[in-house]
View 1 (cartoon, rainbow, N blue to C red):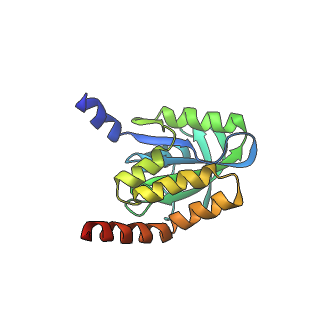
View 2 (view 1 turned 120 degrees about the horizontal axis):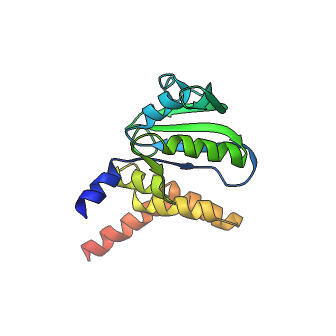
View 3 (view 1 turned 60 degrees about the horizontal axis):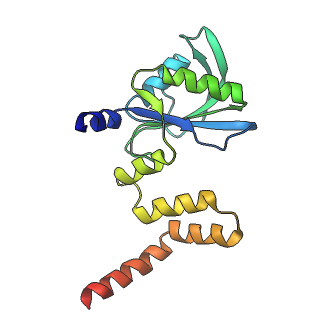
Length: 174
């Protein structure tokens, strides 16, 4: 069992990061040690300059089958959301493009589809966010009212965290 858990930790994960359904733009996020390899395999080029949006043709099968033109943003670890190498592919948001991207990435060694919330889980495990912030991100994503949105933002920005830490210290002192 331990071996399989370690094997999962070495996997590069990918998923549609933007909402599902037809849209003008869809964001596919890739995180893990093979994120740079994914960029190379799909574009035939090295990762772009970090944090700079770069337009590239994205293909499968070594540039033989064009999938789409994508804006790619490269975030080398540990300075990324997850703390690992991370790439974002901003492609056209049709179901066919998203499916083709997922299929092409899944064929790259050690790449698998992420589970829901797994990018945030990795960010937490790598010390990029605390548990309170991880929960607030989930709350923000699922917020339906302005009050829910504001509360999630307040927690994300650490305002509630300061209060909780203060209460904790008082309780420990008692």
